[in-house]
Image 1: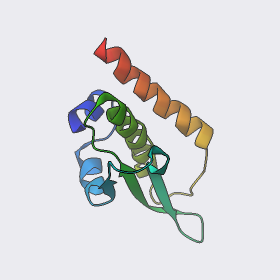
Image 2: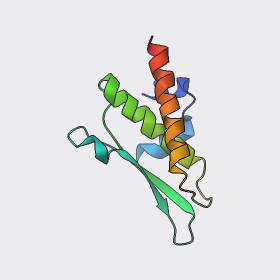
Image 3: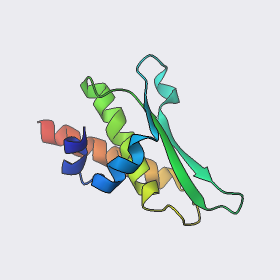
Length: 106
């Protein structure tokens, strides 16, 4: 998965190490539970990130992973800053990364 993400300019080795213990892989759940969960202080500062994803065992799951890792990497770059919930923009960027991956498969 890391190679795919790096080819899409999602993440770096430091990020992958950071996320290793903050990521739970679960395949037997409803896909609506997958996601990235920011941990924000009472003062509104982004302190940490948690992620729940499926194993990238097929193309559908791989797309979910690309989508969620895109969110996680954006948040990782914002750690220690004021958290801004600009969900629409984040979703658009994650979908762009999914589409880049699909285009690379063709």
